[in-house]
Image (cartoon, rainbow, N blue to C red; front, side, top):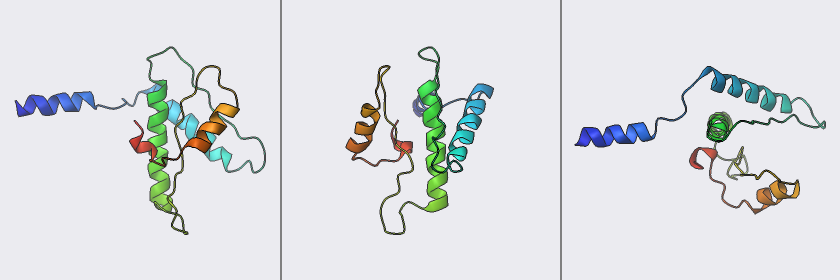
Length: 120
C-alpha cells in the first residue's frame, strides 16, 4: 500500500522530460537572456514560443525560469546587499490579445515575490 502511494506521487510529479526539443528551447532561451546583458540601451531580444495547446509550452518555459532563478540565487544570494529579497524573474499569464499596458500593470500589481520555483 505504501509502495503504491509513493509510486503514484512519483508518477504525478515526473516533471518535464529532457527531450532534444526541450533542451534546444532552453539553449535558445539562455542565449536570449545572456544577450540581454550586452545590448545596453538597445531594444532587448525576446522569445515567442508557439505551438498547439497541450504540448508543454508553459511547462518548458517555467522549467527554464526555475533553473534561471536557482542559478541567480546561487550566484547572487537570496537578498540584495541592502537586505531586500531578490526576485530575478516573475511569471505572468497573458491572453492572446494582450496590449503593452497589461503586462506592465501585472508587473506593478505583483506584490507576492514568490520565487518562480514555487509558482507552479
